[in-house]
Figure 1 (cartoon, rainbow, N blue to C red):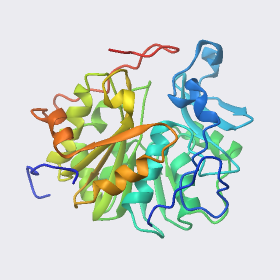
Figure 2: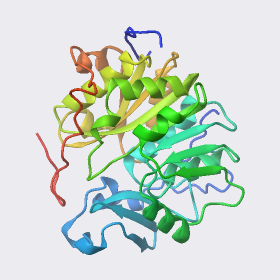
Figure 3: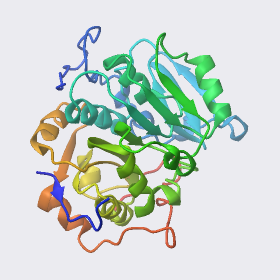
Length: 321
C-alpha cells in the first residue's frame, strides 16, 4: 500500500509498449529510448554546447526527434508532433505511466498546473480522446508561440488559461477533476506558493474522491523540500502517497526530479511498481514504510514560511552528494 498518514482535517488499465514498438493503436507511453540517451534532454539540464543565447530564452527548438520548448534557459517540454506518446523526459514518462495505471480507461477530466509545450495534455488527448482538460499557464506569449508552432489536434477539449496555479486553482469547482498534474516552474524552481499545505488543500478540494494528483518536484539529494511538500499533501487530505524517480535520485546521489503521486483514496502500489519497470529511464517507487521514513517529522510549508524548491545546479552540471 502507499504511505498512509492521518489527515489533519476532513477536508485502463495500462497497456505497455516495448521499446521502439509501433504506437499507432496504443493507449500507453511509447517507451522509445533514442532521445533518452541524450543527457541534456533526459534531465532537462542544458549542456554548454546547447545553451541558447540569453536573448533567445523561451525559444522553440526543432530537431529530428521532435521539438523542445525552452524557458528560463532550460528545457521545459519535449513534443513529438508525430507521436504524442513519445514522452522523452524521465519525469514526464513516469507521470504518463502513473496516469495510465491509476485511472480507469476512457475520458477523464484533468487540470494541469503549468503548460509549456502541453506535452501531457496532448498525451491525455491521444490516449483518452475527448477528455476535457484545463491548463493553467501564465505565460501567454509562450502559449501562443507553442500553439502556432505545435498546433493541438482537431477536436481537442484542451483549454489554456493565462493564470498561475495560485490564482486559477481556487476558482475551480469542488470535485471537478479526476487528475491534477502539478508541473510548474519559474526560473527553474517550483514557486513557493505551490508547495504549501494551503495550496494542496485547494487541490484536494478540486479532486474527486478517487482522483489522483501527480506532481513534479525537483530537489537536492537530502530531499528536505520533497519531504515538506509530501507532508503538506498528506495534511491537506491526500494521505495515500507514493513517489517515483530514477534510481540515482531515489538513492540521494544527485539533484533531480521526483514524481509525487497522491490521492484521497487507497490504491494498489504494486500496480504502480509494475508499470514503472517499463519506464525507459530505470526508475523505482517508494511507498509505505520506505516513504514514511523520508517524511517522518517533516513540517508542511504554510503561507507564512513557504519556500521555492532549491535552486537547480548550474547548467551543464549535476549537483551530487
